[in-house]
Image (tube, rainbow, N blue to C red):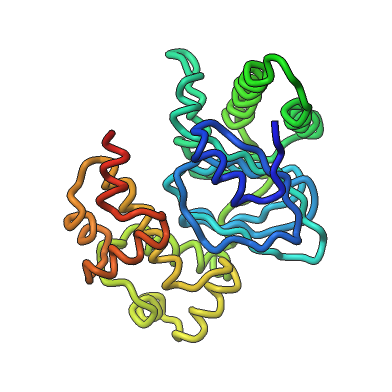
Length: 289
């Protein structure tokens, strides 16, 4: 199958074909803004370092690290060093993956379950890295007769392997996720947690600065440095992420706007359509069908 050199192209292919797509990415691709879309994603770092913001957590992303991201989770990847950052990204249409699951084996588990220590992140051993790249190599091979069947077989085996990695008991002492109490990372974790828990309320820079006893300028600076995005951009992305869940559950558009903290209904329509590509009403109709 085709291995893309652009994350946007892989996502587009995944959504259009309702299957999965693979991208191998380098530093020269422009980093996408904080975003949400209708795919599962798996990020695997081959070399270099990045900082990863996923929903309400900030992670360090280095060689051998792998992340599992649900379709409703906002995320943003920012550079933290000058080393070329080579990574593989899998975009997976959720309904396609569910077709491979059974009563005994839920292949969605790595995207839908989170533990309190590791969250979205796992770190692969040397042998596990080689095995993962073996699957990517198999998918990149050009075949003729039966290519679609063979790609499906490789995909099913790869996702079984990745869930086994995800389910393996981690060693919390090997690498902490949250920052040291009182550190900048700890402050950002607390701010992200607060935003995530109060999306329906009036959130603003001045209010957050007052709540955390910080100056507005300092709050904006450490937030942008740690997450790669502004506070307002993050809040909007989180609210849209929440809105997608509520619409998929059958909530009316106007009610969804209110529950997600959009004080202005027209602003909700504009922000949602810009981020998702369709209006809330069309998105709801699509998910219900």
